[in-house]
Image (cartoon, rainbow, N blue to C red):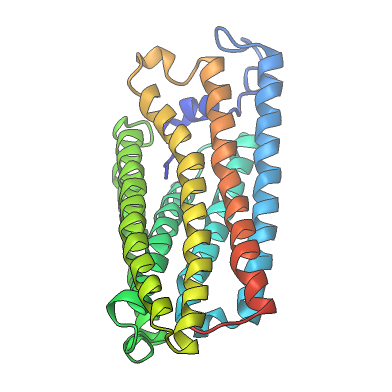
Amino acid sequence: MEATTATEDQSSAINGTSSPDAYPDWGLPPGWTYEGVLYIIMLLRMRIVICYIAVFCNIIVLLLQIKLQSFRKTHFMFGLLLTISDIVYTTAVLIETYHYYLNKQPVPIVYSALVLAANLLGFLAIIGVGFDRYLALCAIPLKYRIVVTTKKYALIIMILVIFSSLYSFIFTRYFPLGSAIIPIRSFSVLLFMVTLSSSIYIMLGISIRRSMKKMMALSEASMQKSRIQQTKRLMFAFSLILVTNAVCYLPQSFFNFWLVLQPIDMRFFLLKHTITSNWLYNIRTLNSICNPVIYWFQVLMRELSCPVGN
């Protein structure tokens, strides 16, 4: 959940866009080597490949969700939101990376805003799945299909999209790209979302587990049993997705947070920092491949072979 953190010159360094052509007469910055620049270019190419794979995987999952008519099933709607947010994220990162790779400066700020909005939407989608399963099994199991409708969820999702978009565009619009507040606030927001999501899933998991035991002990109707099966799949899949999000996002966000605490001449122009930043950004982008793969194997494949109810 990171916006671009450097000025135009610093942005070239931290994203690995410096090349021999960028310094035609006076050479590379102090401490840089042409081998290091070529290594960074390789990392940029790696990110481009990762983005293409991620877009392809998420489009496949999106088509499967359309085939299953996920937009008509309340327990799938937040999964659909996660897929769309991943497509937006990887597309924005791909275009942004191409700008750096081709040394086109400045990079339009809209891509940083889209990345931030998509990251925030991803975590909100994960939380949404947990609350949906809580309503289905704990809060209103008998009235779930009456109270929870696709129209209500569509309205909630629209509100989440508007909130995420406004937050990200206002945040990136009113803070300069080189401001230290960007990585600090981005890390704080990301840490808050990871902590909030994890806490909610732990509490919901405990409540849902208790409800499952009661339903199974009372030999509830087949509708409730199928709902339990669906809940197990969704909660396990989205718990894995939450873990991969944290593992992929936190290192890069923490590194940028640590970087702005260093002396300004050591922040963005050191070769080792640029290489580390690019590696961590690539790892972060890998998350958009993990999400559709987990969702495909844990939810969609079983839904295709053995569909169950809400």
